[in-house]
Image: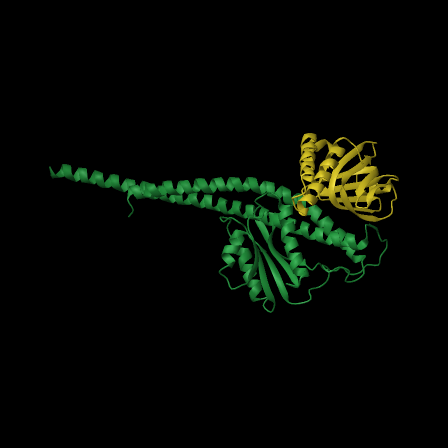
Length: 284
Length: 147
């Protein structure tokens, strides 16, 4: 039976934890709103640019560009997006477990190397049986997501063109809403060649078709990665907000239970004191 | 203001200007001047389908009310088909949003860096030049100058 003072100490400890989780929930909610706005602005641009690249690609004769086509071998670079900070519920565990599941199942026969984005993923995957070839941490800290995305993509384009891998996949949490994230696996490189369409009208290209296509494909990859970084960031804040909300509620429950136990213990103490006094008086 | 309405009125084109980090600007226009990579060109009604890489410069749009809109755009793409003009810029600012003082100081900074070349590396030079052209395009857009 814990003493009154022990219970009191625990109550105040849980209360201060609850203060922290409540503050973190508020902060995540504010950050989530900002992240949600930026992903909603980035999405139309990313989809437009992807469509534009597809329209040019389908007007271009087969295997027109080295970034287009189907994977030529079984070396895969798997890009895994995690967060830099913890306390976001199952956010990172979901991605990491799915990555490990892919390595055991779908990608079992392939030669997979990992690119890990986010400090939490780096820490967790370092101890797992897998090969990590690249890591990026704190990419969104400087507030220039497009530049970060460009750097990541350019590294991979270069490695791809040098033949380091035949295919790059990206595993990330797509932002659905504050309370739901969808784990998504997407091919980044090479870009799928759309089937040749019956060309109705071709464009005039400035400066030239090859130049426009090349620039479009590259830029498209930057923008897709930009979108993916923002999707993952918004998902992270959503997950953290949900997790902190749950933690705050749990803390309330614990405080209620402890308060009950405290009052009961106090009652017991008073009762036994009264009995002592009464029996003392009787003895006289 | 639907898409068909804009396309069906002769002489009126639909302009959509988007960047990765802001909401799209949509306008019904009669004339657009685009800073293409091979030079500035004007788009009028029934322009041939065209896809151009954008340079750093000023994009002018004359809307149906006869009002001019000036944007500083920094690279990207412009697609013209069926009297729809889709501009996917890497960055764009409308003239009213541009702070002239900041643009001026950016130009001075870039000019100083260009003048102080010599010992610096080539990469810095290219970046300074780009910064200078961006600053100039913003000053021009602010002053409603196309080129």
